Length: 207
Image 1 (cartoon, one colour):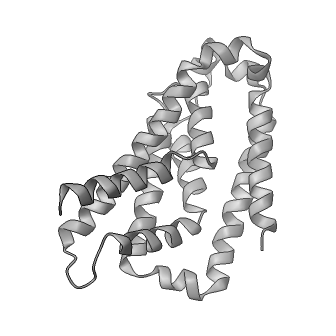
Image 2 (cartoon, one colour):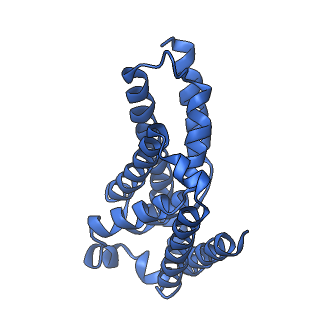
């Protein structure tokens, strides 16, 4: 693989990964609530889901998603339902308590729970598999592609996904002081929860 190949592929994946979405919003929220170090669990959950989706796409199982509308719809609705559920849970949580430093230490979420939230939000988006299926052929020739190329593309995708999640988590952590003292911070969980419910509803209602 040439350096140009690597740079172009990494650039495309980074741009696609850094764009705001439910996973990035969750990373931002966890960064505010639990700090960027604890948010590594969130980043790992998203990365695990992204790597699985990439492997599914490369292995050719994405054909199932493109030909079987039922499988695609089941995963889509499950992902939408989880987004709505998570949004309701956030909406019911009082933001001013969550953003209090002492409160965070006393009721910090478990790493397993944070991992699971990020994993299920990411894995509940079957369109990611379709995206990877469309992306990979742009950089691979089926006759000449090697196992090393596949490995590089999957591992670099996972690294970029993790880095982008941590960027959002760090941004949330750095903005913690602002959110603690502003009106926006007082209603942060309600705003975030409403966005999650809205996104989940749009996904569920979209034809």
